[in-house]
Image 1: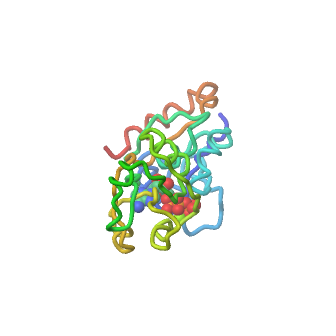
Image 2: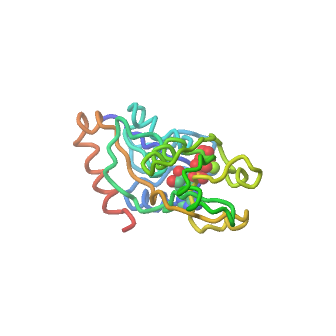
Image 3: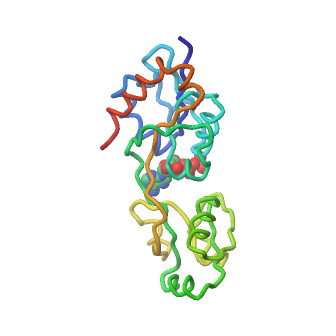
Length: 214
Ligand code: ATP
Ligand code: MG
């Protein structure tokens, strides 16, 4: 039996996935949030955690550098999911991908009138597909964070971003105007690895499925 690597990111995904890892018998040998190590053993011999950026998780697993991973539905939609199975919705890190605009901006009217909308987002692919499906012409402006600033400074008419409580939007005088999709963390599996190492991987997938937050 070879080593099994599980890719996940620090922060929210790790915080909400740790209880599930405990259920599955994969408690990390040290606290990944505190440790500077990027490869961390678990209580199960032969299974280790790989700590990567949230948006890099599908890349590691898609290329087979890690057999398993935990990634947000938002990150998976933006990545496209090539080479991946997504067998388990873990039900944690729940949020919604939304279009948001400045309070007072008439989004419905702008869409109805066929105006060309300027949309700032980290999620260029999700935004492009969403507006193409609606037949709305958009100019997409790629940002890497703090999207809420863009409408306030006139960089964009609206943003596409994750919303959970809506507090950050409200604090910046923005309001959600349309939901694109709900998102939560999912267990992902390298497709080729599942074929060649099913006897090792399937029991882990089943255990995550049992541990998932319903
Ligand atoms: P990085 O810090 O590496 O740039 P990131 O900012 O996307 O990545 P996090 O903020 O930890 O990293 O988010 C990781 C994942 O957690 C997201 O991809 C999403 O699935 C989920 N997430 C992000 N924001 C929220 C939120 N407000 N509520 C619930 N889940 C969220
Ligand atoms: Mg972050």
